[in-house]
Every structure is written in structure tokens, then in C-alpha cells.
Image (cartoon, rainbow, N blue to C red; front, side, top):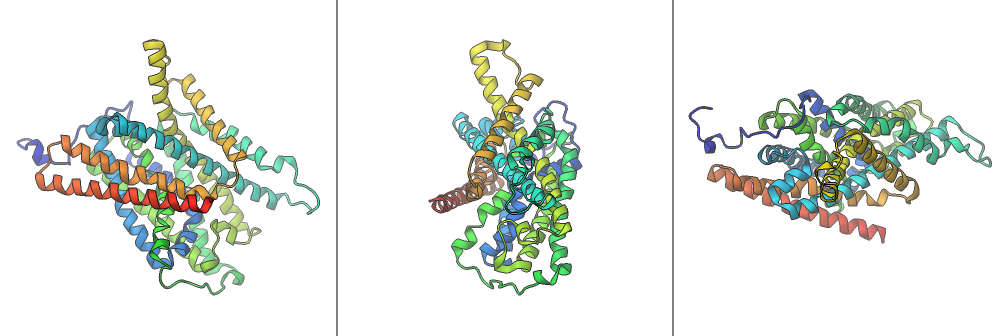
Length: 434
């Protein structure tokens, strides 16, 4: 690189933020990023293909989203290296100012809380169905108390979710992410196998749509895609935990992760839709016979998959709460305030997050209607904030004029697309609730 000016280097070489003991390997980063995206949205992808009007329009929407998804991850890595911050909200605040940071933190907390509650509800529903299958009772007799969702979900949260959420660094999640990814892949393989090898009563003639019902129906699946592929909230933390931090390397990790995720989602969506057509359920597992042993195993493994992704969401939400703790306690107690990353404060915030989300999951009514709202809020982290960060980053970095013009245009397009998706999905979700 000797003899080159900073403008000649362009976007290839940037200083990286100094994270505490960055030890995450590239493979571990791929699995954490992949597992962050392979969440509860996997169950609703066949229904999204039906809602879009068929395989072709759904694929088109997915490919368009994939371009913005990959570019958003690359932009966030570049923005982290420019700003020197190690959290998503820190990057946004360092480049876009304190006002945008406050908006980011508010959206972060709301989005991650809703995602955590949705994950717990999915886990609880799967546990309830498993208990009904494994411990059947006569219709007049009530189910035993220990099969209720209140007991099983609370017990699982204390014995599995809380311990997995306790570690300080996100790099620990690479071990559980491998298990969770394999469990999610099993569900996709089961759906593909059921299409070719399933019982004859599943092989009914699906009433496939040859064209989209309307452009509105095509656009309506964008929130489901965003809800399924949302891993951008964890991008900065994963990037800053890698021991090999460079923009080109991060771009490779991002492409590999999202391509693998796209493959799993596409197989699930295509074959689930081809099997059931317009009769597909919003939860693809509900479309299969409940007493099938393969489907029972799929339910168990999918529950494991969601259990392994919940700690990643909690880690990100806890980072915002730690920032609140740091600012609030330093203002009240001064420099002697307890360090928020210490074990006592960290465990307190972890227990608080699990308790609040568990209570909301058990007490609130059906949350299936707010999936669109979650997908709409996710558009901030996939489109809007990365676009703003890109525009702000290149305004302070030496970049060639033509490259700068292209990147500014791409940042503006990202912000406009994200604003459209947020507005459309939020209005549609509110109309459904009303």
C-alpha cells in the first residue's frame, strides 16, 4: 500500500475499532450471522410465497431484498471501522449524531423486545403441541398442570435460555449457533422430503397462482422477508468480535451467510407452498399431520433452533441497556458507578430482560398480527440506518468523486426503500389489528 494516497485506497482499507479480545473466527462469524437470520420467520415463508402470488413473484421479492441485505451488512462493517464503535447504536451515533442515535436506541429496544416475545411465543406454542402429542388425555379431562405453557416455558427459560444468555461476549454463541443452524436445516430438509416422499393425502393438487394477485400483495411480503432475514442488528457486534477485521473479509462472511440463509428459506418456502398451495398455513408445521414422527422431531429441533437464537437477541438488547446504565449511573454516581459489563450488572440486566419478555409472552394475547410491525421496524436496521451511515461516512472519508456519487445515491435509495417498507407494513399491520 506504500505510495498510494488515501483516496486511491478508497474503501478497501480502514482502521478497525478496538474490541476487547476479538477472538471470533470467520467460520464462527458465519454461523452466528446465519443463526441470527434463521429464526421464527422460517415457519411463515411458505405462507409468504402464497401471499405474494406464487413462486416467481416471491423469488423476485427475495432477490431484491437480498441485494439490500448484503449491502447493508457490508455498509455496517465499513461504518464500524470508520466510527471506531463496537455496537450498532454506537456506530449510528458516532456517524449520524446524538439525535439519530436516540432514535436508533428506541427502535432497537422496541424491535428486540418484540422479537424476543415472538420467539418465546413460538417456543411456547411448540412445547404445548409437543405436550398434547406426547401426553394425550381424554377430551373431558383437562391437561395436567405441568403441561401448561406457563410452566413449560418458564422452566425452559430458567434452565436453558437464561444460562445461554449470561456470557459477556457474543463470540460464545458460535457453539450454540452451529447446533441451531443444523436444527433449522433439518426443518427445511423435512419439508423438501415430505413433498417427494410424504403420504398421499398430502399430495393434493395445489391451486397455484400463476401471477401475483396485485402489486399490493407482492409488496405485503416485504415485512415477512425482513422479519426472516433480520441479522443486521448483530452485524456490528459480530464484526468487532472477529480477529480478522477487514472490509473485504467481512463482505465475504456476509455473502456466504446470507446466501446459505437464502437457500434454506427458499427451499422451505418453495416446497412448502408446492405441497399445500393456497391451503398452506401461516405456521407450515400446522399443515402437516401432528402425529407424524418426523414432524415431531422437526418441532423439537425447531424449538432448539429458536432457543439458540434468543440469547443473540438478548445480547443486543442488553448492550443498549448497558449504555443507558453507563450514562445514567455516571450522571448520578460519577466515575465510581458500577461497570455495566461487570458480572453483577450484566446478570441483573439479563434476568430483567428474560423476566419481562417471558411475562409479555405469557400474558399478552396472540401476537401473530404484529409480525408485520416487527418486519417494518426491522427495515430501519436493514435499510434506513445503514443508508444514513453510508452517507455520513463518505462525507468525512476521502473517496473518489465518482465512487462517492454512487455511494451517496445508494444510501439515498436505501433510506427511501426502507421508509416505504416501514410505512406500508405498519399501515397494513394496524389495519389488520383494527
